[in-house]
Image (tube, rainbow, N blue to C red; front, side, top):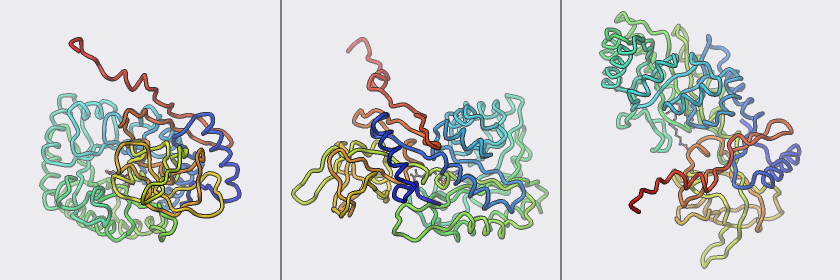
Length: 419
Ligand SMILES: Cc1ncc(COP(=O)(O)O)c(C=O)c1O
Ligand SMILES: N[C@@H](CCCC[NH3+])C(=O)O
């Protein structure tokens, strides 16, 4: 899992590319590396190559840009979607419907209908009422929905509380002790064919043990379902494998270690395994390129004010997490700085009192590991237009999402006549 390289020898070329992009596209902008996206997809495929026909469905929420999805679809990946918007993006990118799985705790009837009409592979059902709604929608359409039931295995993934999804108190999935009854109900309902079970216990997991514990629970459950006469042909193991954000910290488990654990735990299951990695594929394939507007000396601290802000990359303030900050052309030495954006919130902060290489007005910097949950979580807070996304491929770059104009931003407001 390489970083999007910025400092090694070959990187001089990439620095030039980033300078050119800044000059021609403007900052802030997201920049993705096509080569890194491809390499991450291939590394994960390689890690699972011992399995029988696994389906790797990229978690579209991590990076829904259609060009990125197209690239990953060409690498053979499917898509894990959680809204009709994400499904439409995956289909627009040419990902075949039979490689798309629809997850989420609150699918609307319209979304179920769209998924069934598109003929996607599977819907992951997360509750009893959802199963009954889906049966009604499918029956009205004269279709049969292939479903997996998402299990809440009550395992602590040991990750940030806001992105932990597999504990009993989380909203996701169905408690383990209710799955057998629900599976039997599904098998008897019109318009529904249960094909398996699913679990996803959280994101940015840095330890394989909780995943292994969840998978072992799924294995035992599968045995009980089969003993009760049910057919189980697919098991969806979700995503969640963590990636390096801070180069000073130990590396997370590698895809190869993850693959070895999965092979060990699922030996003899006799099912098609599905995976939903998001961050692992896209996170370190992208940076947020920004420019230093000014360096300001406060009473207690020095502030580096960027043209990027929390509305462009919300992860640092939302989760209090670390993103590495690197100058495109690093200067010698070190400065301590609090790196902030121009938004009117004290929480609009990318790093607090951090040692970075010295920067001056006009310098270009990269907020690293921004390819996943970056652009996709952006907002227009403070009426800041959404920033562009750029894909570098070989010696070329393409703008794969143009900058939103102020006119477009304002156009959304409908001013009623009475004003
Ligand atoms: C159901 C589901 N699948 C896959 C993912 C992708 O997770 P990650 O990006 O951590 O691989 C998520 C997000 O946590 C999710 O909720
Ligand atoms: N948005 C989160 C990840 C959520 C994963 C979705 N279940 C992040 O930036 O880390």
